[in-house]
Image (cartoon, protein in one colour):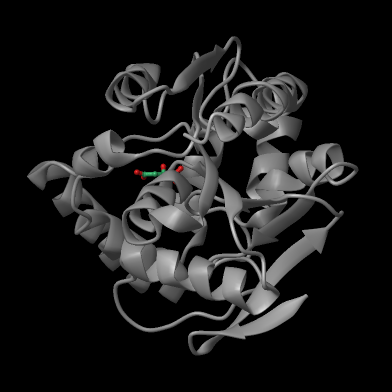
Length: 269
Ligand code: MLT
């Protein structure tokens, strides 16, 4: 499906009925990265999964795309669909966007799930390296970056290369504008520690125990800083935990949705 959102044509999946759960993909992925969750949760929930600006089948725009701008797109999609409060699930860059959303629109959150992400901003060196990657992608196109990142997203060896091929499929077609815009936007993002303490929505923090891109210690720090957060580390899973260990990830999310998320809502937290 497509909607006109803040000047771009945004592609999204919208399946199932019930309380809305909106999944935000990471960088440089697209909504296919959440296919295993669409299938698992659509029998009980309304599952919405957009392609972010510049990724998948969505249109792109010129220049840096800040996490706040991505969050504004998510908010506009929620309004377009008349969803009201949502449970927001963000992976990695999608987590940075979910935290920007939580800061701007706390009343819109029914629950928050932060997956393989972190609250800190880039160090000056990391920001410089992102700007250099953006310049390289502008010169040479997105393929080299996609190839290098696909292999780093999973845990353990991939003898036949089939799992990496599946990850690659979740990364194309990311446009040059999409990749450079997100890299420049991530390089300039502020840290989100102030958002965590103010979070009142029930929150689940999940990471792959073998995440080599954003180490699980970052999730431990997030969970410590968020009042009443639940932390789950999934064994034998890398950065793209919901693809790498899809079944285990779905069990963790389902349990939290049925337990902690429900309980805290009943207590009015
Ligand atoms: C992601 O998976 O979204 C990225 O690795 C996040 C980042 O580069 O900070």
